Length: 150
Image (cartoon, rainbow, N blue to C red; front, side):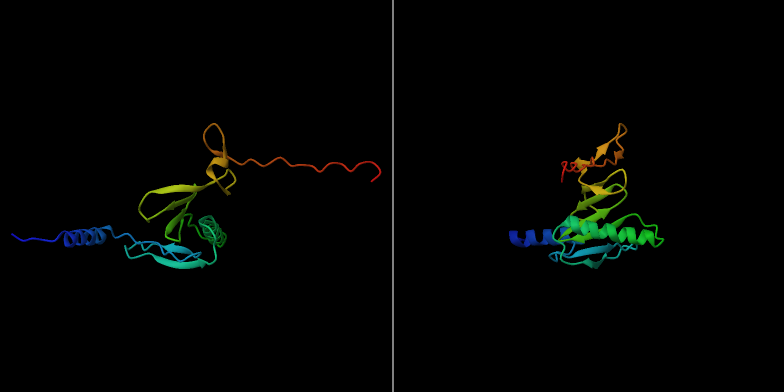
């Protein structure tokens, strides 16, 4: 009977699970925002540096949205953009901005689109009876009239 040590068995199990997952981790360069190009042929994704000195993931999402809009203005048709920021993936589509820890795993919404296409925190968006977002502008405050004799 062959005896295998417990640490050796755990290491072999971890190695086999890592080989099966095939997940590519997002880079963790502090403050660097990446645009991610996924290889449709199954190769590893390419991480292209888009911006540096981004203080939060929302700022990186804004840079990715700028890039998406620039490409659309130049005649492109690609609506979905993928990015990466400090170990997390960012997915931008027609519904808003989603964040996840892997390219294929679960995602949660970070910013949703308003009725006019802008991005906002999901709880701040007004919706009509059908659930569709409605663009609501804040009331305009008028300055008080100057007092007589001034």
